Length: 223
Image (cartoon, rainbow, N blue to C red):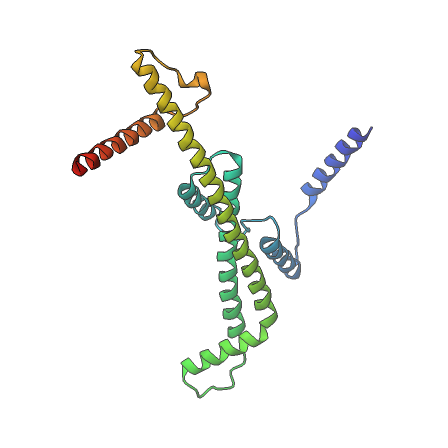
């Protein structure tokens, strides 16, 4: 019975959404825009309707290229890092736009003053008139900065642990491969649960051979 009621409610909501055309008046559209702004700063909305989705995707790709996340947790942290950075950039833009708009609407009591002086006074007046809005933006910026820093630290610690484990596993794999090679036998790494690619194994072998050559060079020079 509950499933039927849920289905009926879903259909009703869908039908209502089809009939809804959003706010029609300028005031209604402005309130809707402000709601989107509020959710964009404090909620889960990352890309606002006025922002470029492709620019956000490029922004996210730049963080993915930098951190090369593996598995779900690292991917989640990289996503959170990119989102915090995106929102920080938005706060800076909103602050500049807010001051510009407020300055443009300030009365000009110094008509005879040079343009630079008039502009400076307009900015001072806009800072004073928009102090509450600027304070709110500052709070959002501080919160997002802390979130960014904490996420970076968490991601780096997680990747440090993972890389140390991978290096240890690679060393174990190379030891086993050398043992089988000395006996003239073939070895399948998957038999022992190793999941490294051929490229990773080849790179590890090259690194080990390089270290051995360096050790031989040091011993030769010391002798």
